[in-house]
Image 1 (cartoon, one colour):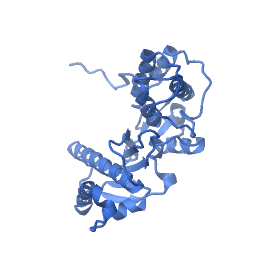
Image 2: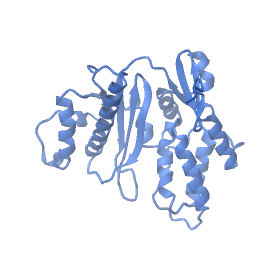
Image 3: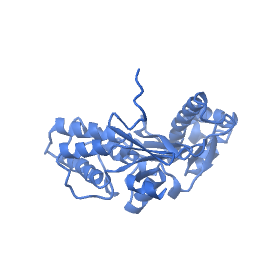
Image 4: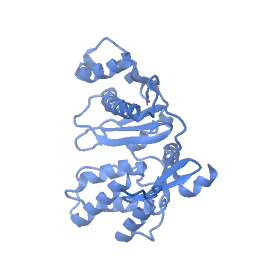
Amino acid sequence: MQDLGVLHYILGLEIYFWKGHAFISQNRYALSMLKKFQMKNSKGIDTPMEHTVKVPIKYDEKSSVDITLYRSLIGSLIWLTVTRPNLSFCVHKLSQHMQDPKLYHWKLAKRVLGYISSTLDYGLLYKGEDLTLIAFLDSDFAGDRLDRKSTSAYTIFHGGDLVSWISKKQATISLSSCEVEYKSLTTTTKEVLWIKRLLLELKCYADEDLPIIKNDIISVQALANNLVFHARSKHIEVAHHFVREKVIGKEISLEHVEFSDCVADFLTKPLLKNVFIKMRSNLGLISKSMLIKI
């Protein structure tokens, strides 16, 4: 084996160290992608998707696009989400149309490229200041206009640094916003506990510290702490018992967070420009030029 020194570039990821912090971006990869799809000189856009956009699963439009080209673009965007979690929702939606993409979807995808061209040097900042484990979860109730399935999302931070996130359509239809959120809570709990076990093995987490999971719906916390089931909540009893077992066993702690501070919100729906920029900053997603201010 050979010591290649400090890591700076691997698989399209650029790693830059500054004052004990690590900054990970995909500047060169994003630039090559813009060149490939002839969007290098495109006009910069502030958000990857307009907040009014509703992406249907099927679109009543006869004009199709090059399927191979569309799939290539979506595949490239999926890899870019490794350091751009703010693209996860729009890529998640666009990837649902790879079987039969239309001009409508292609235009939405090109808008994402326009946003990337204006944020080429953006990446994730890792400070490693403490060892706390905090998760935020959110969901979009019946967000898909065709099958009315909901989207679950979570963001997990270790020491204030983003380490895991997801934006995924739920497998079954939910009958209430509480049920949607509770399914998200179950998924988030499993991921948080897995990360905790991994961090304990790496000696990067204090065993006595309790992971905190935050959401913006109070009824979910009430249900997790309620031993009595009502008729309207029987169908989520299994998920309830799993989460409640972890709450009683003091493996996790549930807290309420205001809607405006739930940083998983950007993974379930398009946002207004000012809200999107605030969420992006809260994730630790910054421009490389901003490092000098740290």
